Amino acid sequence: MTFLQIVEGPLFYFAAAVFVLAAAWRVFGLIRMGRKRDISPPKGSAAAGFVKGNLRHFIPRGMFARRTWIHIIGGYSFHIGLFVLFFFGAFHIDFIKQYLGISWTPLPRWGFILVSEIAFAGLIVLWVRRISDPVMRLISDWDDHIGTWLTFLVMLTGCLALQQSHDVLRGIHMLFVDIWLIYFPFSRLMHAFTFFLSRGHTGATYGRKGMNP
Image (cartoon, rainbow, N blue to C red; front, side, top):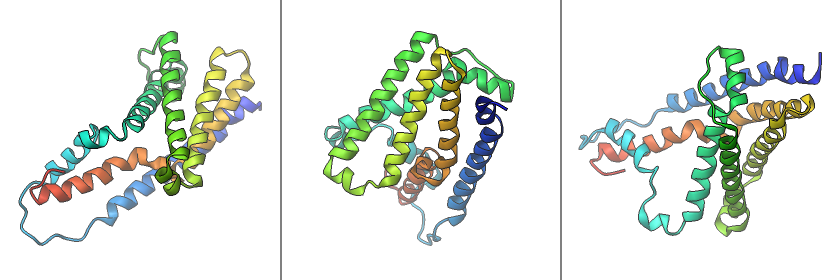
C-alpha cells in the first residue's frame, strides 16, 4: 500500500470517523446542558430571538465596525473563501463524488486561484492581528495558533497539489487534512459548528425578554 493510498484510505476513514463522532458528541453535549428554567413571564419570542441573534451578528454594528474593520474584512475573506474552496474546488468535488456519489459544477481554475489568494490573505490578516493586538494576544493560547497553522498548511499543501505533478504532494496534503480532521473537534475550530448555538442562546434570552439581541 502506497503513502497516498494510506492517507486517502484507512487513515482518512479513521480521521473522518473521529471528526464526525467527536463533533457530534460536543454539539449534543452543549444542547443537553440546556439552561436554567426562566419562570418570569415572557415578553417576546425566544425562538425569534434565536434566529435574530444569529442573523444580526453577521453584520457588525457601526460603532464596532469602525474599530474592528480589519478583523471583519479578514474574517469574511477567510471564512467565505475557505467555504468556496472546499465546496466548489474541482478536485474536492471529485473527491466527494468518489465517496458520496454526488457532484456539482466546480469553479474554473482561475476562480479557484483567485479565491485561494483571498482566503490566504484573510487568514494571514487574522493571525497577524492575533499576535500584534495586545488584547488578542492576551486571550490567545497555543490552541488558537495550532488551529491557524494547521489550516494554513492544509491550504498551502492543497495549492501545491493543484498541479497534480507528483502523488507525494497530494499525499502530503491529505496527511495534513487527516491531522486537521482529528484535531478539529477537540479545539476552538469547533466554533464552525457551535457559533450559531452561542449566538442563538444569547438571542433567545434577549428575545424572551422582549429585547433586540
